[in-house]
Length: 141
Image 1: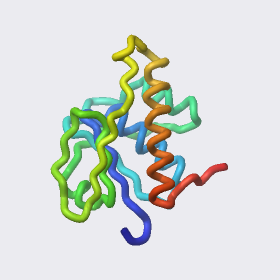
Image 2 (image 1 turned 45 degrees about the horizontal axis):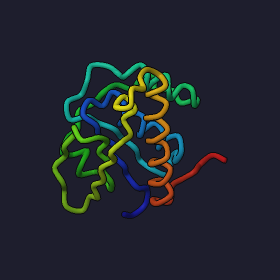
Image 3 (image 1 turned 180 degrees about the vertical axis):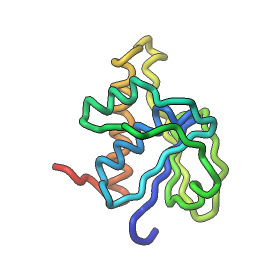
Image 4 (image 1 turned 30 degrees about the horizontal axis):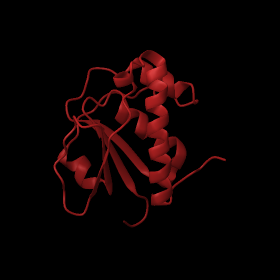
């Protein structure tokens, strides 16, 4: 990896978890990293609870929408992070692939915004660790 690292976050619909991860990484790293997100079967709109959970941290997703993962996006990334077990991305030589088995509070009966905050916080912990590993965070104190 030379220069600014490029990270692609992928989940199935690109409406929740991968959007959370990308927004958290972009907020943490600023211009020190190139950050994108995509979905293997993109949804029609962002998950409203994901948008609200990020807004609670002062992160605005206005203008974002689900996008499809493409071979070019994967090839252009230094690191591809898949969130959850539903999304499958074909490996590309020279690109590091990581899978995050993100907490799913609904399996414990936790729903609504309480669920989304737990998902957000789990992803945020993982994003901070990846940013540190890549040498791109934190930007803020």
